Length: 198
Image 1 (cartoon, rainbow, N blue to C red):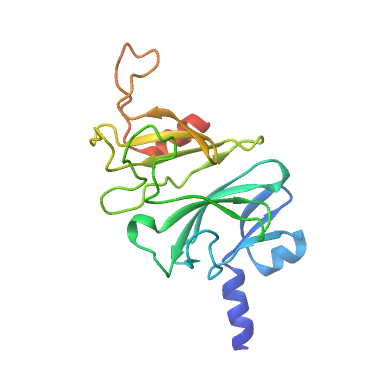
Image 2: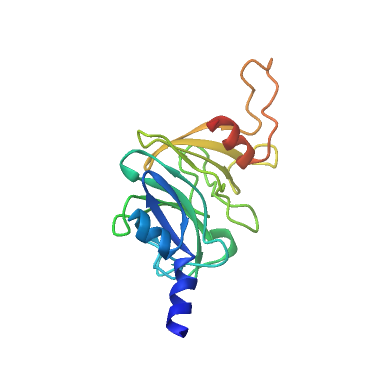
């Protein structure tokens, strides 16, 4: 009985891709849909130095592209995990093929803001609503710190691209297109990302 309860608790935390859709699934729905399991809590998180997926809500909103590829933000626990690097983006279509895209506290991925990292002073900076196009382009919002000339008026940005080739689509404080030179006002990278992806 204890073993069955343990299986049921673990199954409730399974991340699955099925029929082109992704979400949290129980063992019953996996049996019905023949879903592909990408990660469960306590799995080793690829590229994270021994950290595992875990904690409450170990995944956030996921985005699915062609071929069943999924982009999601995962929560990490264990080895080397601190508040500024407890979240990371992962991409793949199978458990064995799941890869780390980037992690909180990594250098900002466009390489255009010297010394900037993906975190605030006390927390990781990766937005919880990453998007993935059918062609594999990624879109996400992030908070940064430590960059040359960075202030609270320009520390969030919306990034787009693919691993190794990201660029800044818009940065807080940039002139708003068609806005007569008014700066982009939002500090919420999640709201920025939702608006751009809609």
